[in-house]
Image (cartoon, rainbow, N blue to C red; front, side, top):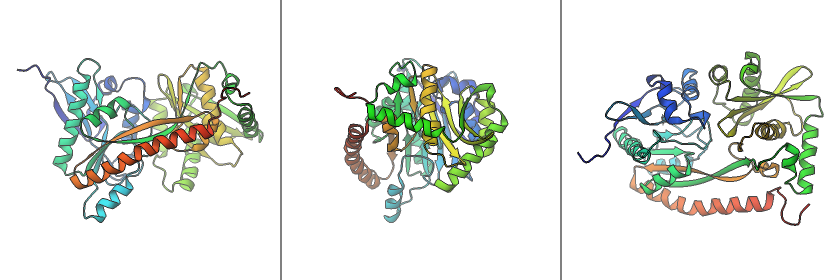
Length: 388
């Protein structure tokens, strides 16, 4: 025996096959989207599954004693929707060349562009070895199933770097996050803005509430079925108009409220005694994650108030370090949310496709960083030296 840890890999078709306590011990408390309850809620309400094109194939890694030491949330996919790391061009090019891009394997959280660990490992000296074993098991399984590729989306930077060192292709993206610099209040936060930008935000907040709008922030026991029914109406109406086919259903939101009420922060807008809009956030240990938004009314700046400013208010009041406002949206910059790098790693089975994607990514990464720098330089509202 050389002392090298030996692990047994198992792929499961749903999280009902693993105890919540076992899974959550690896996932940790920081990121609510990795919790067994969140991922299981997606499965129980058929938001993921064969019909949705997200077939769960989660990886479990056990040591010789049978203890769960590693895991990865994974899905066999027949399309590229709901991922927020866009590879449609890769798929189209491979198909034109006579290849078969789908099915593929996605390691991440469905419909959720939130950075977090993806190769979940028991804390300790062997964590790096466990993550390497998880990556190797995923690649071996993809080969057995004749999957074209594996895509690890929104991992932490350290995982991204380790996968790159193991030969996976590295992709760079960005989204917009707000950082709490020890602000005592929203006005204290605005004090860091240049004068003109500070006045603009105050004007937006006033206009958002000028139509008799009242904002309510609900969490824990304050959440009732009526709130979820109303929020689903907003979500489905707005989602259908913007994207055509929203991914989540009414049952999921109710299940989320039952299973994770303490992590939910739901901002609801009331007008003339009726709920008219809402923004869904989930709370981690030190971060508030903005997720879904919907509205039945057209009120100027209500979206910014409910999704961005209320989130900052909550984070300051509860001592949270960050608000992560999700994918896309340059308009977030002038409201205090600055560009932050996000990552994905890609195992590509076909040598020709791998070479083409590798060349593309080598050119894309510096372009992404240049774009981030330009956006921040041109749009940041924060006061520079000499500004009022």
